Length: 347
Image (cartoon, rainbow, N blue to C red; front, side):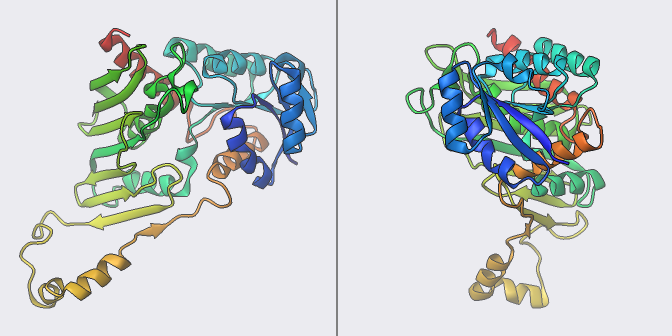
């Protein structure tokens, strides 16, 4: 049986999620709401959605809707999620699900009181490539994970993407840093300290963040999120017996590269002998080796948001109230890290 969704919002993320709804066998997008009835009707007509509502509450009154995808303005995510949960709907909320840990706690409390599923849309963690990296780290297959380097950034401006620069709910921390921070927490565990260098524009909105997280287990993470520069948009986990990499693009990743190295052997590139040394000295063979070392391919299917959608509908069908991947604890810890950064910076 399909989970019948209503969508709150008609903006960029609402459009981006449409292919996932189309391709997910257990999801059926039946309604959309907007503060403007005309906009809701137009969106529904263009995208072949059965119902449209000029108001969120009106959509929630539709008893045929099982779940709500919250994709309205960031500052309204928490209140919309709480309202939907109290109306008896399961909720998949676009990240960030709240602007602060205090606001986030209210959402989680509402979810627990409602007996309905609530999940923040940390969609990257459901990609098969990310799941593979998580399994490699948890199993210590390449040795204990000690250091993560990850970043996502691209140059943009208020003229190009104005919503990212809204004073009250924009900024690089909430829009982009959520992803590398959540990756660091999920792979390396809780943190007991953060060093940061955060840049702001003339309006006081964060546009660039360089972070170093100190994890409880002694590991560290170096993270970058930026609206100012193009970063490598990749991630590497350094382990005792090698490294695990997600090459660019970090968003929509399908490749995982595992390089193994024993601490008891010679350093990479040094002390080679015999056949290995001869092969290393041959530029043609080196080129062939590099061409063949593309790593593992882990496809996400027809759309990059599809694994998240399938996970959510599976949780609904199994009567689960929380994801075991995008846990409530993970979502809350990300907000606590961001709150701590803002407290340090006086924002």
